Picture: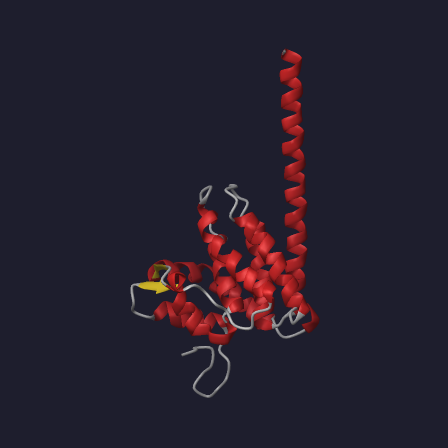
Length: 211
């Protein structure tokens, strides 16, 4: 049963549903439980959930696991699915509920502030064709996340969080911020690749001079 509405039919905020999930007594929180809680609104919240996880300071290679589910979610969003689908085996993926409580506790205050100012606007950026483009952008960002690069998770995860918020709230401004952050990520990747290629060529030239 979806938790996204109150008994009076009013929609619950994303943060309110997170708190309900955190307050449950079961020791572990499964991905299937999160998807069921949000129902038809699951795309944005689940992607936002994984974006938050990827904002944590993981050691090199950690985001290879935490970023992998975003590849599937982004592909479905780009494909234009109306309702989130996850494989049955993935429904059982879980974290300790106390870890989840600490995680959302760290982000709850800024999340509530964002929710307070977020609202449906610039719909062309978050609906229909715009949502498909968001899916493609998140697919690219998720691919970057799974690369075992220390510190390489921060900017892609922030961009996915903005996109997810835009999808949840139908907020085109959040989507626009996602595109701007994606542009920053692309620029950094291009600069890093340029430096790697230059360093590789410099190394080859140095070896040739020694020979």
